[in-house]
Amino acid sequence: MRQDIRVRCVQIGQYILRTGATVRQAAREFGMSKSSVHKDVHERLRHVHPGLYGEVKDILDYHHAVRHLRGGAATKQRWILIRQQRAAQIRGKIAPVSERANGDKA
Image (cartoon, rainbow, N blue to C red; front, side, top):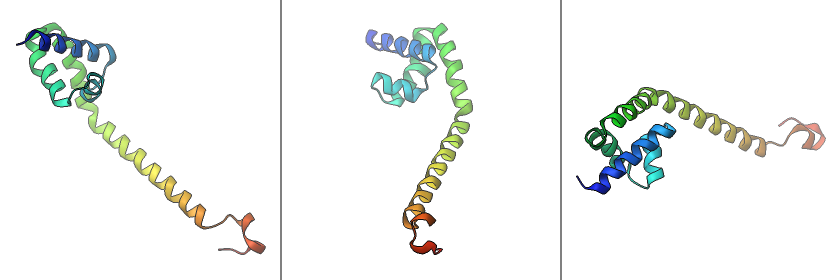
């Protein structure tokens, strides 16, 4: 394995250990694809730095275990936003009582 790839694996591993980042966050930080980061920390790091690999693996296993919760929370937030946007559209179409002529109901 090339030396630059070995160094990159260790750098990514240390970043994940230091920040608790996910594979996607690490990929964004290093300007790489998540597939490359995944291969670096799951396959290559095991051979390059076994001690660091064990610590990084614990963090990534945790992220894997809670990903369904994060997905549910993201979906919930999305629907809250959609409801707020719909309510704002309705308020825009139906003027509040104080703005209606002679107080007629819509």
